[in-house]
Image 1 (tube, rainbow, N blue to C red):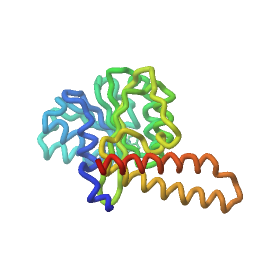
Image 2 (cartoon, rainbow, N blue to C red):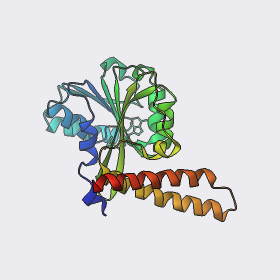
Image 3 (cartoon, rainbow, N blue to C red):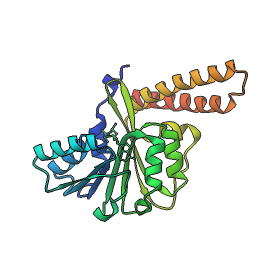
Image 4 (spheres, rainbow, N blue to C red):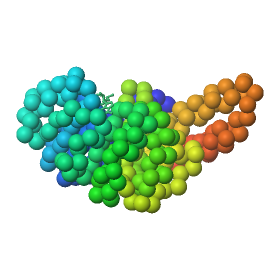
Length: 234
Ligand SMILES: C[S@@+](CC[C@H](N)C(=O)[O-])C[C@H]1O[C@@H](n2cnc3c(N)ncnc32)[C@H](O)[C@@H]1O
């Protein structure tokens, strides 16, 4: 099965679908600023604050915001992470297209997002395990997970907010997520991770070390894969 066939929602669409209607939106690492532009121009969000740590992407964002006629509704800032964003008083924070550890670091440096009022919509490019581990040991819950397929990749998108009560995820679930709501895409996602774990286990075995923990994770991934395939057949 190709990812294209499996995929229905692309990455940016999926991120937008998890932003609560009417939110004051912050987008960290906005680059082109497509997410805030789309959110404000469609009426999903009344206003947005978009930041980037590099002047180049911010200049691109400024051009795109001006071209969309949204300069009065989207505030742009040159900033590292969420520094300066608290004054905007957001209800939703998007951090997408960065490594999972960088995303966790940005959240950790901004205590104001530890509030049940603020929804986080996160899309890690790498290290999804480390990101979930951080979130679920720091009181973030009310989790919704989605997958998005685009150009041969499957992206994981996680929405959550601070509840003080974190869900309990298994080691495999910290890696791949759970309850994605699309059995076909979930099966393709799990297949990819089973192959990844095959390689990891072979590498560990070749070095003469014990791969028991990784074998356990692969076993769980296979079980989940079989379950998703069974859902697809029903
Ligand atoms: C790959 S782009 C993703 C753009 C957009 N968020 C998306 O998902 O399509 C990553 C952007 O994050 C910015 N970035 C990286 N580290 C950052 C940080 N600590 N604070 C703010 N922006 C950051 C980069 O400059 C870059 O423009």
